[in-house]
Image (tube, rainbow, N blue to C red; front, side):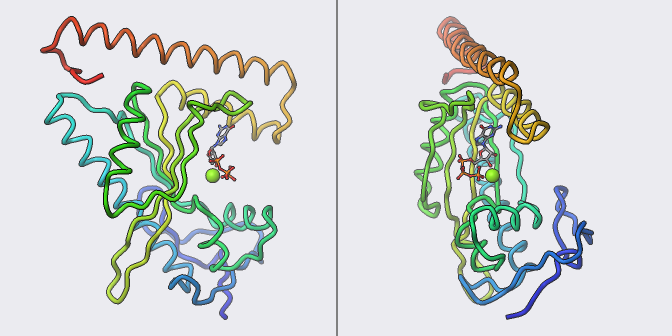
Length: 244
Ligand code: GTP
Ligand code: MG
């Protein structure tokens, strides 16, 4: 077992450049071991970044192919991120686990996270099917918060998948959390997330109920935009979007 001090570690920032990150609070430590074939934080970032890049590339290829075959893009944009060491440690603690590499690999499903933003709800299920059909991707769990929204009003489709990362001497099946939602759902979720943090999860009742009201408006907007698009597609088959 070796101890790694977070504030000394090399992490990838969102632009994928390697930066020497400084962390507040000096004594956060993560104990390393040989679990799941990953034994250092450097290896963790390398492997999870590789997994993220693979899923991102797969999504870009699907989007390009869709443009080629159906003349439209189901994906508006993609955001990808690696969870910060601070959040990993917090989440392990919250769930009652010791901060070890074994535990983070085993119990944290969203170390690598990718968010796929689509125009229409129908695009979400199309992407879900396309991901599920890929032979090297294993779907290990899904949560359909679109059919079954959260009490907060949150809507999104979540998948936990594994993708094989080929290293020089072994293959590591690596977990990635994929969140798929419409532009409108994403707009709502970003504001709700900010409010949640601002009030530390305990927002005043009128704000909570206003958010639920806005979530309903977002759902209505998604339904109306979809049917508007379907109507336009039906009128002009030669139009840009031929596959609503
Ligand atoms: P964590 O929330 O990550 O601890 O995992 P979980 O096991 O509860 O999984 P879930 O699929 O419910 O949520 C995973 C992620 O979805 C969260 O980390 C958020 O990014 C997002 N999410 C879930 N619920 C909400 C919500 O009510 N509002 C917003 N804005 N985001 C949410
Ligand atoms: Mg999360």
